[in-house]
Image 1 (tube, rainbow, N blue to C red):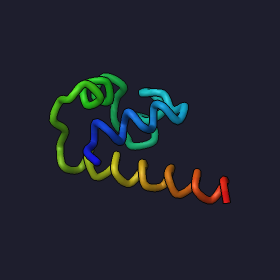
Image 2 (cartoon, helix red, strand yellow):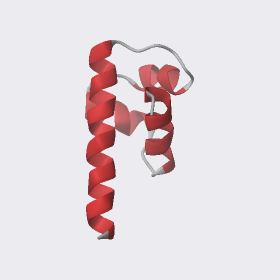
Image 3 (cartoon, helix red, strand yellow):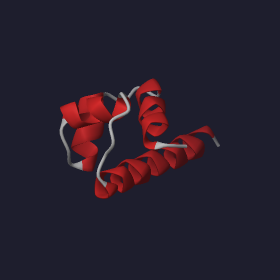
Image 4 (cartoon, rainbow, N blue to C red):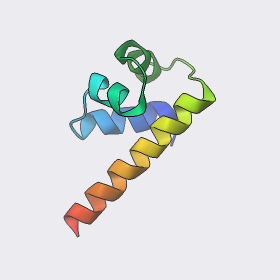
Length: 64
């Protein structure tokens, strides 16, 4: 799964672009560009990946 897909999945789970940005320490316009396919720095990509992994795991635990 790429960064764009992770962000779209987070948005479909009810997160906002601004909320994601706050959680990973960036700006909403940066998230907007990433959702629309712009390249992101490695550090930002890892932060998105880590946040996505945490959210998926949290959702899994809540449904168990």
